[in-house]
Each structure stands twice: as structure tokens, then as C-alpha cells.
Length: 400
Ligand SMILES: Cc1cc2nc3c(=O)[nH]c(=O)nc-3n(C[C@H](O)[C@H](O)[C@H](O)COP(=O)(O)OP(=O)(O)OC[C@H]3O[C@@H](n4cnc5c(N)ncnc54)[C@H](O)[C@@H]3O)c2cc1C
Image (cartoon, rainbow, N blue to C red; front, side, top):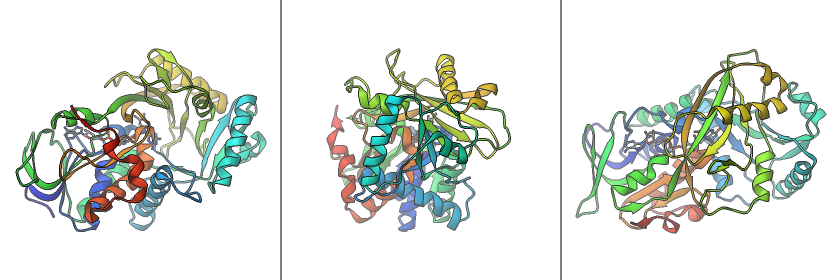
């Protein structure tokens, strides 16, 4: 167990990305210490919807397939083989189609995905209601993704931390990192609110706080904080069985030209809503949870009541029973978006022995575990997996 303040690798950030990297490095017997300013899973990794998985590997896996399909397997391992109860359950995901226009788009998309070897199917509303009885009769159909599911975000993130500790890693909560210095010999000295730490290699896994941590080194890690918000009902008997959402936003995004001032796949440009986005389901404790809005409003944790109502209306279009249940609580968290929509994973070219893992945006819970594994492999072997080329920090990290 790492007890001293010296280690091979020092990781900053105790979200899913940091703990997954720690776990995989510890599997290689690297001496790892992780510093988290608050508690493990206290930011995005603890407040998300827990949606995970995607389309499977496909015939020719790209980075996104690696991250989603690979993470899906790692979540399974954590629960089924290692015995951590993370509420992992993968019944598949249903995406509602609201209009005839969306129907054409979705049917084309399903055919395209199938031709690429991905697991996607079109279901008529009747077929969907056979597996999800509360789904509305009035919809135009559903896309069904069999490789999707949910896990409890806090339990899963904490479990990766525990699994890392079981392999000898040191995980230190309430250690706010305040300064980073590279020594003459290329090793790192890190000042935290509870003392100094040293390591050969430094990993920045601070999610939406990548810009402030980059400032400590005089580099710009171009991540913008995006607010995501959710709401929950009181616990009710089992009613919604799949990870559920809507095809309205993918359709709208496919029709819009990009706006250079905003990252892709958000719901608002300034105050203007450009789409409605929906995802959610029912948790093990019986709450029905939904969310969707993604707004560029800085580090703002206040749920916006108007946006919650829009989201609830959309959820009620998909599941009429949801419209009859009062909202019992709302919350928000901050997601790390890059401006080109791609993750930033790999070596920071401006410094020796410095790595970064961020930019997993709105799917970082479901993609964090494999991102951590790919980064751990890179650090341990000195070579990046070929799929990481798309995520290379060299494309966007600059000196200020
Ligand atoms: C409402 C909402 C719903 C979402 N739903 C889903 C979903 O269903 N599926 C999905 O896959 N993704 C979802 N996401 C996205 C997902 O939560 C994020 O992409 C992911 O959690 C990012 O993980 P991370 O480790 O990069 O960042 P974080 O979890 O934010 O972790 C970064 C950590 O770094 C710490 N830190 C920052 N600065 C310092 C410092 N100076 N010193 C020490 N520690 C520091 C922070 O305290 C924090 O704990 C959702 C997000 C939100 C907000």
C-alpha cells in the first residue's frame, strides 16, 4: 500500500476517470496515489444518470466504440466477477421517435449502424410496448439498443476506488491540489491542502476543472463546463425497465450546422433552446429519474425550473404515467466538454511525464472505465493504443 507521499504515478481527481486509471495502473503494480479535493464521486461522476453502454464493438471499432463497449465489459467485471454491487443491469435502451421526420432519420440510422455491425434495431410502438408496457401508444416507434444499461454512479465510482486500494493504491480525499511543479529531473512535486506529494508521472483527471488545473502549468486544456440537470419522482413500483430516451435531439443535431462558439450536442446556444434532449429510467430504489438539458453557463449548480418542466413534458410524451407523478427533487452537475466533441486522453506534449484524461462530456460515466484502462496501458507501456490517436491532447492543448 502506498503510504508515503512518493509514488510512481500521481492522479489528480477522484471522478470515474481518476479512479478507473488508478485501478488499472494498480493492476500493473504501479505505485499510485490519487488526490481528490472533496470526496470520491462528489462531482459529475456521482450525480449522473448512470446510463452506460452503447452500440457494441461494431465491425471496425473506433474510439467511441472502444470506450463504450470496453467500459461496458469493465462494469460487468466489477459486479459479476469482482463482487462489487454497483446496481449494474443491462436490459438495453429504448429511444423514442416522436415524428414522421424523425422516423425516416431513425430508420436510415438503424440500417447504417447494422451495416457497420452495431447492435441497433427499429421497433414499432407495439413491439416496444411489449417490452416496455408504460411507453406511449402515440409515438412513431423506437430505436432499441440491446447493449445499454445502468449502474449506480456513486457505487460504481467508489467501487473502482476500493478496487484500486485493494491493489495497493493510495486514495486521498479532501486533498485540494493547489500547485504543480516539474523538477529538473522531470519528476513532479504537487502541493495540496494537506501536504506535498511527489511522483515520476502526473495524471490530470479533473473533469470540468481542466482549465483551472492547466492554469497552474501555464497551459490551456480547452474544456468548457456544461451544466447537466436532472429530476426524480418519489420511489414507485417497477414501471420503467429500460434506459430510456428520445431521438429528437440526435435528429435536431443532425440538421443543424455547427456553431463555433459552443461544443456539439448541447441543448442551448446562449439562452436559445436548440433541441430537447431526454435520458433516464428507474433506479433500484424505485425513483424515476430523467434529465437532458446541457447548457454552457459556467460552474452553475442551480437547476433551471423551466428546463426541468420541458424535460418532464418530453418524458411524459414517452411515458404518460410520468406526467402524473410529482417531482420530488432536482439537481445539477458539471460535465467536461471539449470544443470538437472528442475526449482528450494521452500525453501532454508541453511537459515530460504529464498525462491528461478529460472531455468525456455527457457520456463519461459510461466511457470512463475504458478511458482509464487505455491511459493506464499507455503510461505503463509507454505506447498509446492506436485508437487513442483521435483523442490526442496535442491537437488542442497549448501554452498560454
Ligand atoms: C446530470 C448529469 C447526468 C449525466 N448522465 C450521464 C449518463 O447517464 N451516462 C454517462 O455516461 N455520463 C453521464 N454524465 C456525464 C458524466 O457524469 C461525466 O462525463 C463524468 O462523470 C466525468 O468524469 P470525470 O472523472 O472526468 O469528472 P468528475 O466526476 O467531475 O471528477 C473530477 C474530479 O476532480 C476533482 N478536482 C477538481 N479540481 C481538483 C483539484 N484542484 N484538486 C483535487 N481534485 C480536484 C473534482 O472534485 C472531481 O471529483 C452526466 C453528467 C451530469 C452532470
